[in-house]
Length: 241
Image 1 (tube, rainbow, N blue to C red):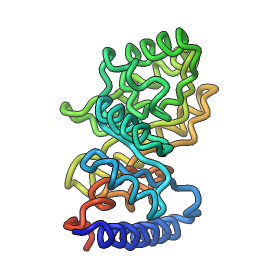
Image 2: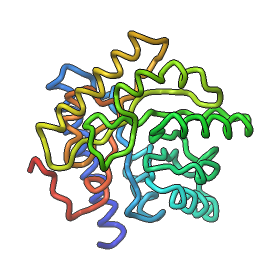
Image 3: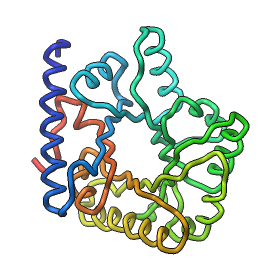
Image 4: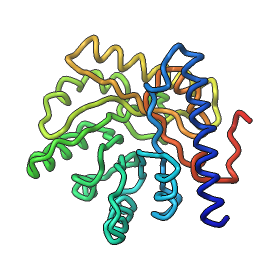
């Protein structure tokens, strides 16, 4: 697909996504302004990100620290101000320094040890890093993240850490299991509500929902959806179609 046609595709698909967000919010009695759309750019390069920016996207996310660094370096080389990128993938301790000061927010803080490591290194650099706590609501062995009861147990400790700013929770739902997806998204919201009731936490951000299930996630309370294929892949057919 030539660049002009691809840019037209991005703009048209974005309008379709916005309509889906609006409809999901209407079904659940919410405002579409309460939901942020993050374009997950792990499968595309900087030229496609720039086209997505021109199509109207303002927030992006990357799964791998090295790819985040590479994209930001390429923006710098081209003399273009990059958009904010969140880090949403698995983050190992030896990659923390790569994302400090580069990622706008780390959505994948999956353990107390990782939170403590980010806190220590951010404090050394005199930074305060916005974070989301990743929760394995579905309990799948293949997924990382806090167990819900574990996060509740450690929340006070996490809130006391310097160098991080807890903003909310993130989760991933089981693939191709609509009934389980809804339970997972609802469970994340209920966990957030419980944490706010039982601690001094303010956790307004609920990051859940991807290309196949973001409408359901919004119905259950998502305030941030992470969309990759539906944004960037012309061959992608939404699951609901």
